[in-house]
Length: 351
Ligand code: TXA
Ligand code: MG
Image (tube, rainbow, N blue to C red; front, side, top):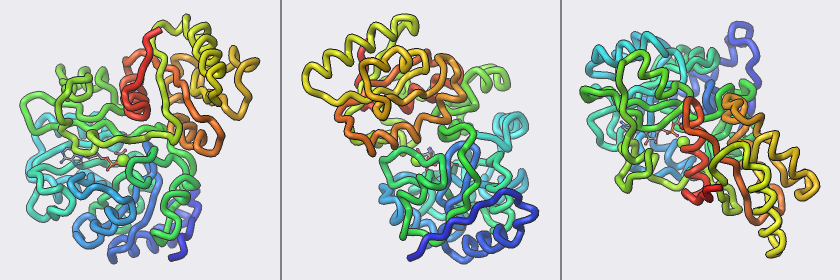
């Protein structure tokens, strides 16, 4: 199958392209599309056979449910059996935006999507291209991230192409994704909201709107099965093993220099994923193709938006070990550290 990439810069002027993509989706085909978080691999959310094609294209475990993307508030009611007052407040405060709500599902939602759960994840993306596509399809769009299962999520159309080339007919290219980490998932089915996956709608933002919010114990290192099935799989890992250095940001430079020297003395080609501050201080030790600058310390929006592309890029280098710089898990830092911990297989050194 030929995979076509269509660049979308203006949804109004390119209404014809959007309509064609919507028709393809509605008819059971797969279309990759941009969102503000990562690229999605979409299928008609009411069509179990189309959704099965997503699992095949990604090599995704079949017990891992898909989330449904909607274009407006009315479409939420097509898939959720009940929108609780808590969910209503979150919809009003953050949607459209990088948030997925877990709600009780309607019968029309195929079991193929929910993995047999009584709930469904619903997300209203902020991306204008994503919402125009869903509107054109006229149905909720089931979409996981558009990567082969286990790899980092794509935040550019080129990365989608690398994973999905020959497997899907169409990629809509909306440019790089703004946030770069997947949506925050909040379970709204109980008395207190629970964050199942941290993202750009932060714990602090949710607390402000709801008063209280819990973190799924699986996120804070407890040895329990996460309630978002996808969170239990190995994920985001580059080919070379990654170790994180965690601790006081002002001590990062000496800690990195020490670790890099030790590893190089043992014959390793060391790749470094770190802040601008650390990268600048390693230029005499590490050749530039092996140095990835993820942004200034504390510039969490930049770090999140670069993270996956930089992890993917190490696979094109000869690095055989990677060192990454950790940060505080406040605000968007919680989402970044969650992804870094998974990418490293929870391999960290406290400095
Ligand atoms: O930002 C995003 O959410 C992106 C873009 C494309 O919208 N999508 C995304 O989908 O990250 P995916 O499939 O890669 O991750 C969805 C996560 C998985 O970990 C899945 O297990 C969990 O959501 N999930 C889906 N339905 C669920 C449910 N009913 N209960 C608990 N977790 C659920
Ligand atoms: Mg994913």
